[in-house]
Length: 90
Image 1 (cartoon, rainbow, N blue to C red):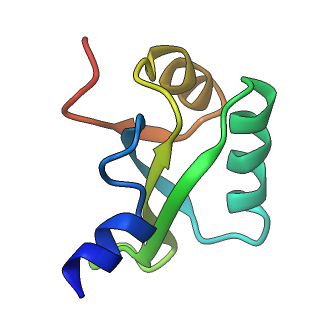
Image 2: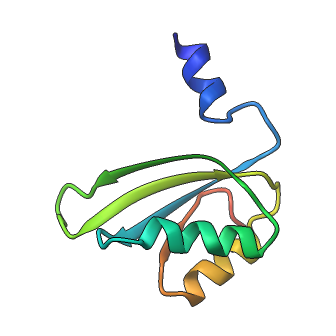
């Protein structure tokens, strides 16, 4: 069962993980998908949950089809999203 979940989430494929804090407003996930697409990337998987202490905020984890997420992180931050990833070079 765990292997199926890992496969569905894109783990084991050429991809990188990005964590985002986003408003719970309608259309935010669509906006993020548009940014990813504009950069020529694809979302391999996405999980989104309501933030425990901030109900108006969602915590989302994206896996995108690239090894280099620096440009994507820069553009997402420029669009006002809070981006965190321990894999990103600072």
